[in-house]
Length: 203
Image (cartoon, rainbow, N blue to C red; front, side, top):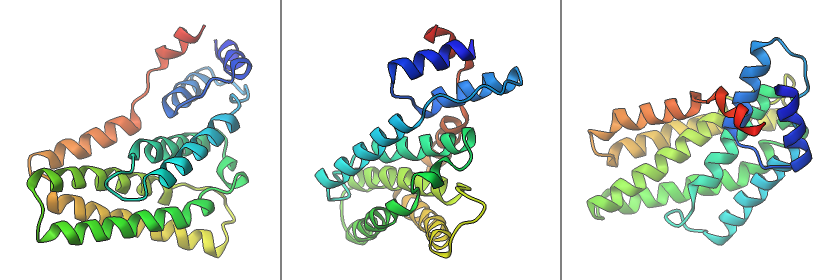
C-alpha cells in the first residue's frame, strides 16, 4: 500500500499536508518498511510561496491569514520527522526570521492598542490569532533541523520559543476564561491527530 500511495503522490505531484505525511509515516513504521518517503520539496516550495505572498498582501496583523503559517509549520514539523535534515537543507528556519520577528512586533503593537481599549469581540479575535501564532512559533522552536546548528540559528530558535511564551500570555489576557482549556485541547489534538485509513482512499 505505501509503495502504491508514494508512486501516486510522486506522479501526480499532489500537494501534501501534515496529516498525509503523518499517515504515511505511521503506515511505514507499522510494517517496518524502508521505503523512501514521497517527494516533499514541491509541497514545501508551494507552502513557502503561499506564506510569503500572504505576508506581503496583508501587512497588518489583523488582516493576516494565519492558515498559511499554521500549515507551513505543521508540514515542516512532519517533514523533519519523516526526513531528518530536510529543513536544514532548504534553509529553514533561517529565512523566516525577519518575517516572524515582524509578526511578533505587530502582535505587541496590537496588544498595546487593545489593552486599554477595544471591544470584547476585537480582543477575542486578537486572542485567537495570537494563540495560533504562538503555537506555530512553538513548533519552530522545537524543530531539530540539524545536529550542528550555527549560533545564529540556535539564537533564532531560542527567540521563537520566547516569543511563543509571550504571545501565549497575550492570548490568555484577552481570551474568554471558558475557552482557555478548549483552545489548548484543540491545539494538541490537531497536532497529534492523523487518520491512517485515509491512505486507502489514495489507492
